[in-house]
Image (cartoon, rainbow, N blue to C red; front, top):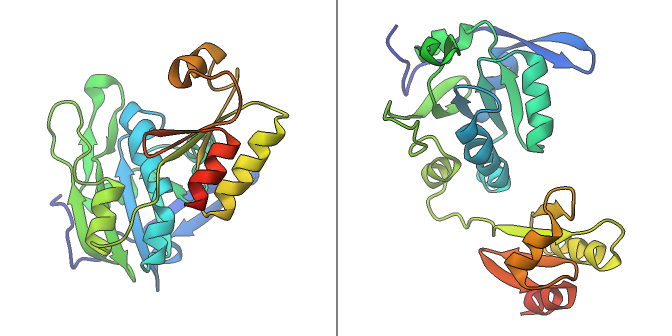
Length: 243
């Protein structure tokens, strides 16, 4: 089947989605009717590029996308509902709706199916993203089949640039913390008050102490990084934000 493109309606299918302990039918109309929706589809849950880049960046830019008229952001993959729910929790992707296309119906309807039997995946989805308005595709970004499965067209930055070319992007913030640290709690409150989303890495849970010393030259907590720059501890962060 020829792949769908701008100006065409998305496939009319029913997805089997988990809601608590029950199976729930979610239709294409439920997802798209009367809404502006960004969809990004990928070959599989827990796969490297999908987990390290595709999902995290859409989750990071969700606020910017929604500030410019997007109602929902959907991650779609040919996996079952159990896998997609677990993957969402593992990714901490609270701003994205994960939709399982376990029967490949939507993917086939889009003309985006691909045979990945050579790596044991069977039939999966090509990597693409699209902006859908009231069920009709406005713009579609399809990745090439180049070696290494590059992420060059369907990424969140490309989508945001299409929707709002001059939109400012949120800062990349990471905070290294340890459990029970009051200065860490204060630093996180400062970031929240400044409306700055952050990734938290907890000592001996996400990162060993030796790595923290190697990165910062410090052994105190918290340690904050903003856009690749080491800001320092809580007092340093407060001074930085005061500027």
